Image 1 (cartoon, helix red, strand yellow):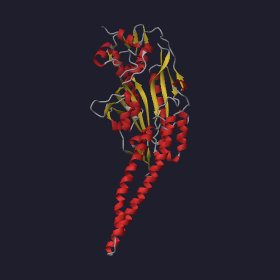
Image 2: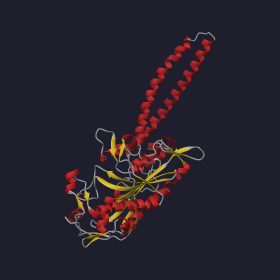
Image 3: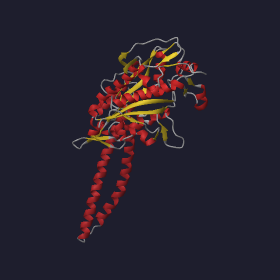
Image 4: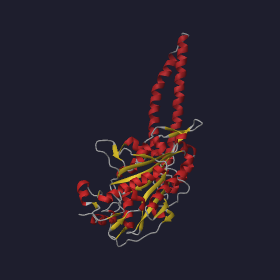
Length: 426
């Protein structure tokens, strides 16, 4: 969430930012927040003044009694103050709760390079890389996977419902090869491998994202105030909640690997019976805690890492700078990497790369202690390294020919000698 100090010191900047987003509701929230914060601080001063008065009266009563003088008037005056303080504390708490409500829901302040636009049609392309091939006569990828015995959607639906799948044989091995490939690449760059909890409690989750926006796509554990994780970003962002880093311990670079669980799977069509939009998938995620002055450099580093992975897999892709109407509330700037899907002859998003600046750190109370002893909130960044189900579809459509799937050379060390995947026997 936004630091209340920023609201107090530069409300005009937040107002201008919300106008960029075209969010009239949140502009009204900002106005209410500023008013409530003024009331809160004024009330706090009154309470502090009354507490000071109570302490003074207590001292005066002691002094009068010690000198055997009449203290009744002072005692009566002092007796009225605790109840008054109690009522004012209640009023203070109500305002604090409303302030926190708005702070938790106002979006992050955007970087100046974020393009202004109403929706994803106005995202700005940064670069295009690789040769776009066409496979428009190829059957839908789900049909091709079933035909070759590489996946089973019907039996997965019988076991778990639609939006799930069984991967089989060497194609299942290819999923694990992609994970190991991404993990090894990130570890070689100094990222620490993290296998996170797959369940998070509500309190930890609220420190990471706005559950009001995200809860409808998450699986809640029945009878518990906990959720299956939608991405390993979330437990890694909550990992150091209420902790203070020493400045010399930053940056902290993490590579999280986990299954991810999403209730909503989005569009139909080619995605209905396939592995691109599913309820469960494997993902390797990059995450960084760093000093505020370093975060924009690391934002580019995370993107470069993801680009290397998809380039090494022989896939064409483009990078887009996400506009104000498509960026969401947490990121200050966001790149998407979209891979070319030869059958559709269109790009599809496979990587989301965000600099969240201090937004998550304020929510989770994660700070750094500077060398001069002062403290400030860290910055957090996250980016997909690879979501395997989406990459598998792109690999299938790009490298499939004559009834066989050619394995990208970068994955050969992880495929037990398999360099092409042939149809499985039924």
